[in-house]
Image (cartoon, rainbow, N blue to C red):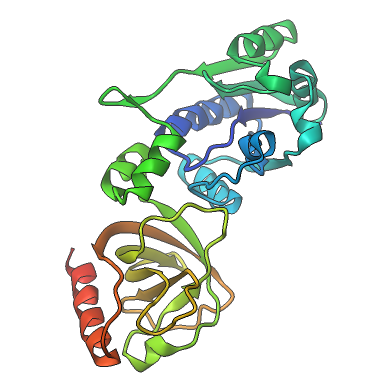
Length: 292
């Protein structure tokens, strides 16, 4: 039976508040010589409870990557959250953590709620852990300049295009994983071949525009230029896509998943009168990304 230290939460964005929780879980796991595990949920509980579509900062896979690479989590366990799960009494949920997932220590945020009607809270979690002789850490609120670090606040920052402030709250640049798909190869005709990605409908996107980004390919970091939007100069289907030209790179990435970090916005997306005008602007965008 493999015991685990379990960190509880949705962890959308994997921001610096989550980082305090994950570092604590990692430290406890090292001391107990057992895995540091994250137990999270998909879809978001709020979506199931309210029936409203909830746009998140990252996909479940992106959150997993960030938690493992930035905070050294050994495993990320994603539980399917449905109406039956939502109706589970709070103490049954905690008993499941012990009996099914073999928790020997639980770490959660001060505002984490669980169980039917959100009846479970930090106080009940502490008491339950104490009565079952397992460890428990409750992580306090983290703030920047008296502003609470929260996923909802970061979502607003990203929607407003404030990447710099979002990065301060996240503790890392806004992150997206690109599953590289075949495109229409227009980029090759204008001297800027791109890797193409269709973002998930469940993910919140920054404002449309051209961004300076970085990508990692086979462990090597490259600067890049990313167009996020509907490509009005070369398409009229209004499909949202993410097209990234990687500077100083030549290779076939189709079918691969590569990490992308947003650095700053270069300009708004706009329609150009000709491909020559688009080509000239892209050269300027590439120079901006290279020099900054």
